Length: 151
Image (cartoon, rainbow, N blue to C red; front, side):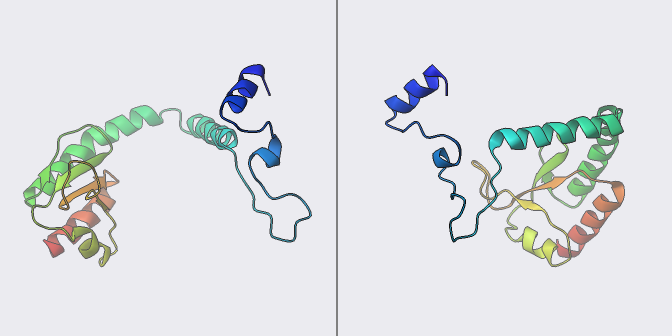
C-alpha cells in the first residue's frame, strides 16, 4: 500500500488490512460456503479483452452499425409515429417514445413476447414513456405488429 493510500485510510479511521481481510471476504477453512468475488479491475480487464476480440473479429463494425442505424432508425421512427406514438428525436440506437395515457404498454407487449423498457422511473418522464432498441428489421416488424394489436 502506498504512502498516500495509507494516509487516506488513517484519515478515514480505517485499518491497513489487505487482501481478503480488507474486502471482508470469508477466510479459507470456514465452515460456510466461500463465494467467488470479482474485483472492479478484473471486470475491466475482461471487458477490455472482449472488446479487443470483438473488434478483431469485426473491424468494420463501427461503420456498419452507423450505416444500419442511418437506415433502420428513421424507418422505425416513422412506423411508431404512424401508430400515434410521439417519438423523441435522437441519434442513439434506441428510441424514446410516449404512448399518451397508456401506462401498461410494457405489460401488454410482454403478454405477446415483446419486451420494451418503461421509462416511468426516469427523472422528468411520466408513466407513459417507453424506450425500444433499434434492432434488425425482422425484430422491429415483430415489435410493430405487437404494438398494432395492443394500441
